[in-house]
Length: 149
Image (cartoon, rainbow, N blue to C red):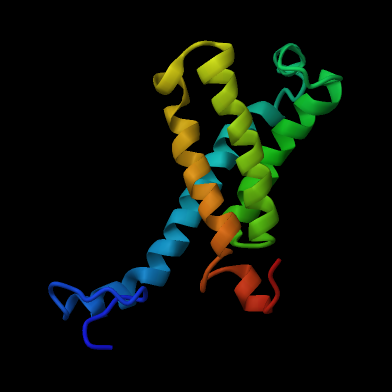
């Protein structure tokens, strides 16, 4: 491989190729796990009272809130679990991305908090969009069963 990366770029220090190859799949799984667990933790608080956000979701135009609030709660919890496991990774990541884009809108525009209110959701949506495009990776249940979206 002549010290090249997977994208064909030549490395300044070619022996680092072995390090990157050894840890690439592991860091991919680690990032997927962190994103999934973070969503689960965030969703768990909502699942304990799934109707708590009815007014908020209705104020954003998601009516009836009695449908959307529990859906949001359970999507974060179970979507995060699927993402962490790498099971149905792409659909879980797409669902999480949609939720996160709404939260960015909510904090940035609706609450006028700008970057400071949206930063966490922006970071998360970067990760979830990555997995929507790339799938679960080598250490995922999707790869283990041999089927992916």
